[in-house]
Length: 73
Image (cartoon, rainbow, N blue to C red; front, top):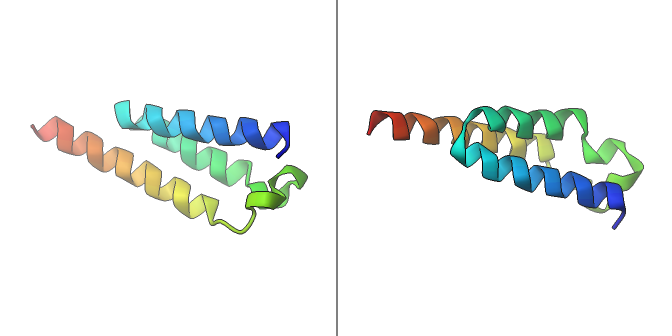
């Protein structure tokens, strides 16, 4: 695993954890998976078969729905 891939996965994990606290970080997750799509880069070959944009979209949607549920309580 390259250092760039490790940094990308670390950023994805950090942004996902932050999106639980504040939904706007879910957009950062989606933008990371869309604009730095691993399958388009040499460092992303080991994880290229996953659908990262879809995963990022689901994380963003879950963050928004979670924040809406917390606001209603």
